[in-house]
Image (tube, rainbow, N blue to C red; front, side):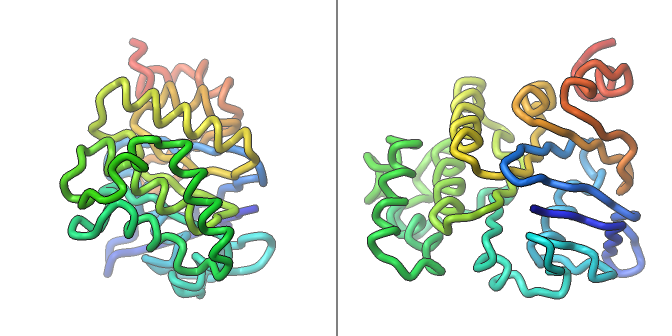
Length: 235
């Protein structure tokens, strides 16, 4: 579904991504691991057009999108949940979710999608009239994921969806991701909880200093000594 072919990306004179190549097959979960500053967020921002790659080397459903603007990429079927959640704090939960559906013309479908989001995150139905800025961090993360789902994506990109959340909420988020995967949604996941990410994902890549240094089936990465030492807390 998604393919990056030797993607390079820079901030001014500073090159951040060096020949990144990865694939996200349809219906699969792929995780991207790496320390802070490795280039994970730059990778997903480059995919969705918020940061430009140096070459037209990103393909979605077989078509190049490297030169496509961010708002058009959403209409193609790619949605991103950003690291900082970026909810609209002075808008209600209901309005935040509605913003995610601005590309969907079928209002009946929008209502169906909203019911699905409420089924995944019942607290959002209870707090539909609350301002998003008054919610807890975990509830704001639910809004951010729900907003992305309202665009009816074929591919969901998640940048650190469990960052800063309590263990109970972390488990809840991963349960939701597992449900979405079971429904056939394709997911590219960045998460600090490397062990849980690898248990959920089908395939994984490890970034270091803007380069992919390890890749493989999730089971093989879980047993890789370098991955164990660096990300799984095994000495």
